[in-house]
Amino acid sequence: MKVGLGSRTAMSTMLARELVMSYGWNATCYQILNPGIEHWFSPKIPAVVGYTRRLGVLLVAGAPVCAGESLPEVCAEFEDYARSQNCRVCYVCAAERLRTLFADSSEHSIVTLGAQPVWDPRDWPQLIQDHSSLRAQLNRCRNKDVIVEAAVPDEAAGDPELRRVLREWLSARSLPPLEFLVEPDVLDGVVSERMILVAKRNSTPIAYLVASPIAARQGYLVELVARSRTAPNGVSELLIDAAMQRFAAEDRLYATLGLVALASAAEPGIRENPFWLRSLMRFARLHANRFYNFQGLEQFRVKMAPCDWEPIFAISNEQRFSALTLYGMGAAFSGISPWLAIGIGAMKAVREEIRRYR
Image 1 (cartoon, rainbow, N blue to C red):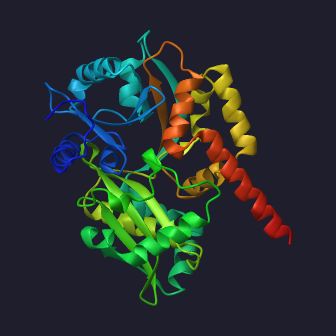
Image 2 (cartoon, rainbow, N blue to C red):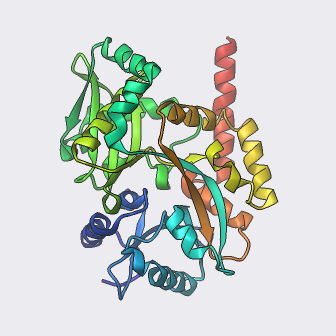
Image 3 (cartoon, one colour):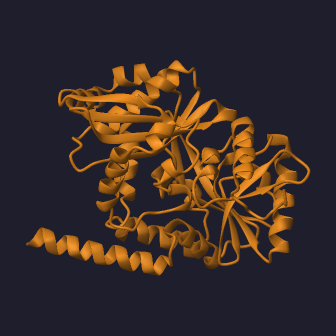
């Protein structure tokens, strides 16, 4: 296999999957098996990097997947590969382990994107016992005859009813479907080790949850919760409750619902970002909620009473984090020009305001 070509052959996907299930530590590790992610393999060490290329930047999905002690060498190898392609590298949604590695590097810049809430699933029963509002929400949904069932991953991947739920959920969003680390079509990727739970009413799927393993931390990332138009309030909480119970039954030690961009818990780190980036983030908090519900996303996770919030970073191999790198990140997530995505979102928001007015 040629190193660095980013092929998605069956063989490279199989090798990437084996490495993810052996060394995956970053919450995003299993997501490198999603559609649209290229793979680079180290020629010397058992390691894989999942990435996408935008505007001369190789945007890494989280961090290299390898043994912790191999991380410095693998990063150096991958950055050498990027230079051979006349590209820079940005590790997107990196966690504390990678931040520590580059903390003293004069050749890398680190910015805080937000934070991700985390739980110990073994503490979940006590958490439910201690939060009456959460119990009430779960009971309200159960009283509407909603049940949650586990699905066989390979069967769920081809289930047209789950595809219908996803279409309905996406149609309610202001922005076009996002990609990269928020790819909604996760059922088109590798599903073998994923946990898929389906909420049903009258035997009809109305919502579903996909959780991806974080093997090296004995944990899971709740990667996606999609709900149909007919799903009652509380169905997301019911799916997460069922997932946490299953994580605990498997004796998992770690669970997260993933990044909350601009989270209040990340404010100390955000204050250390460059002035221009802090200003953009402040503007997004004030005005971008109609396009992407930052506040609602954070409030929902706070309601689930996480035991901690972990800061999440973007780390670029440039002395100062640049606007071009940020633009490349935006292009990776939107799949199109970020300005075009904002324009589409604005038009949808205007149409929605007109509809509400009428």
